[in-house]
Picture 1 (tube, rainbow, N blue to C red):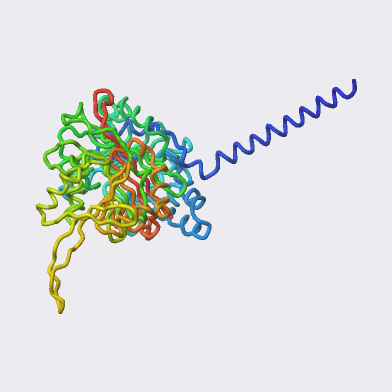
Picture 2: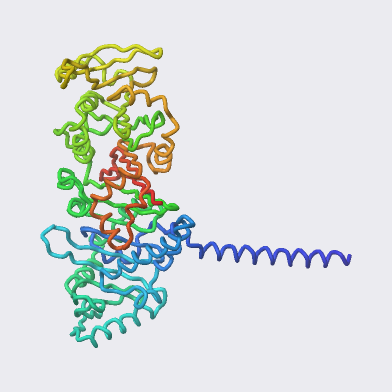
Length: 529
């Protein structure tokens, strides 16, 4: 009988220790920098002050103070300090654009929700109006910041104006960081824990007007909120207008100028050292052009050591300039540019209704198509028009179809030489095409394809992709180096991020209806070393 109270006490002690241990582990997990990537996909309260027609809105949903720790945690051991310092510089550079010093003015009170809104992107040369919404971790953090902020600017000679608009107190004047040219600024405090900082009183009044109209601000857009939830968790949510897609993101004009294009909605999600972006191009109503062919992937059959790999559904349709489908307007100009230097590959693509797998080696190309797409007889007619002659070449247990061009030799041994333009080999499930016998031989190699295959498997939505592109480090750096947003990110970080790019994967799905709209899903994944 005496043993029973002892056992009860022992069990109680063990349960207490277990609960304490679980509590400590839970608290440690909540404070882990890796939790940064698990932010909610819901729009923050600041979205109430963002017009639906804003050129660009970016809602950052993770604590900015934890960003350097996250970057340090996922960086290689030998580069963690450098990565942490680069993240700090990037964070400080972002807030410095608004005339704010993160360490001295924001770090002590800034919460996890930060929203930036740009109100126009007309390319006229004037600076766009902007609104920065900052959440506060405490009830008096934002209020105390406002007092110090305007007191500092006032002592520096700034004339302040205090007005009331829609029952809110507005303070406006000119201010900047020390050593910078002063710029117009206006502020107001919402419910003591949300600070709005804008590029002028008129811009701030516009945001307060929008907040009163349910059908004009983002928080009242039920379809936008639903789409963001479907995209999943992310540290940032972004919307971009058609004009901004063309002006800042370099979307082709034919697509950006469509009257039915509503814009882009996307989420950004860090995954270790990679950054994943998933988004939707939104269109008003159904698309007039015919739907795209269902995805039918060939990437599992990829071989060789390609520096980049592309899978195209119905490439013949992509090349046609008279088709007004969004995929044609987006991918078509890029494909035609690549094929302008590869006339033989261009003929194959024009006759192929898909899918087509393009494996670009260091100095040659290798294509894979379904058997009979295109037929060799139809291709032969096109190639003969370009002065190529077909013949057969036997060896290694197979017979190859080759197209050659006669060229005149120069020098002592003048004469004619047959220059190979295209070689083709047929297999049970694929036809292979290459611009040399060496390129065609690489279809037997498989050891070098693992990096591209890993990119494919890591890319969300890849299995449903209609068009996809997988790039190794060098072509990815070349592509990003010409992209304005990437150059801006590098400038803010003060660090040569270009050398850290290890790969880039892009995928576009077929369009489909979403309520009374059409959407075209897109996915991207940037690999950083």
